[in-house]
Image 1: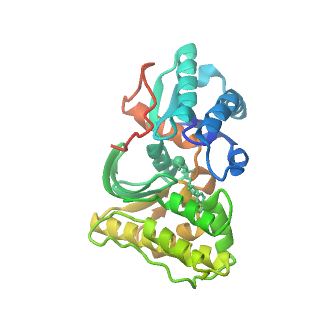
Image 2: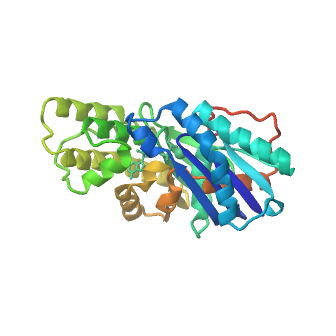
Image 3: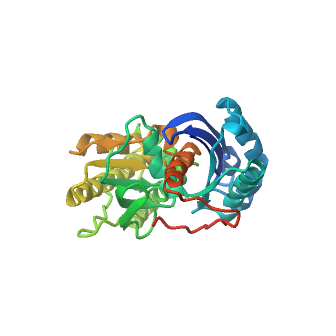
Length: 325
Ligand code: KG4
Ligand code: ZN
């Protein structure tokens, strides 16, 4: 079964063809990072306009790279939320038009569920029950998964998401945009020598990253961070320490078989390596390109929804604050 996946929730216009929810035939991404870099962050209106320019060429390119014709496509999966309303609309309306024109089933996918299903594109299929740590620009969620589409939210961030914290810290340290990768790069040349607080929120599976961000800002304002690389290394160490430790604790508490990691921050090598080294349980992490926003993960997730009979009709709308339920 071949699915076309479409993802336009934020600033990447992406389309992919995935077979049976596990095999990527193509995975095309048009990044807008250079366009938004000059503003130091994503400008929603600019993102929407750019999606409308890129979406048809990106879908065509995904079809071409997968050497696939429309008669070989079985369904179309598209991100319907959460995300920027204008950005989501481009993907959803394109998917609706293609579904109508080619008489194909339409499947609305939650972007976060898509991130989770990037782990099914890894060669080794995850085993239930498992704990999933989703760390992206807008979310830091600990989720218990007992089966396909079966989610229990164990904890979430009470303020900033991990990716958001990396982005804000990069701004404080003058490391540029996009912040997460810039922090990781700078941290490679720095040392963990700046004392920063960790919010453990004991007795809960929740996270909090605003305190550490503010602590970094105060130290920078007081001129106590002379080398931004040390600031980046210390910040990265603190965030990774909390994420890894709380994920392992939750996995042990719920007696799961595996841990899976996903979302843009999962591209961070220190996070990947620390979780792999410290976890007593098997850990699955998608390859870097499948951690940040892409459409292969949306097609993979769409496949499992389709198997469960979950399709949508043309009345489907975007839901910018869609929750994982
Ligand atoms: O999942 P994603 O691509 O988009 C959202 O759904 O939000 O995640 C983007 C977030 C950004 O905050 C970005 O700075 C962060 O992931 N990120 C990283 C790295 N690569 C991306 N954070 C830390 N280290 C990285 N290497
Ligand atoms: Zn994302």
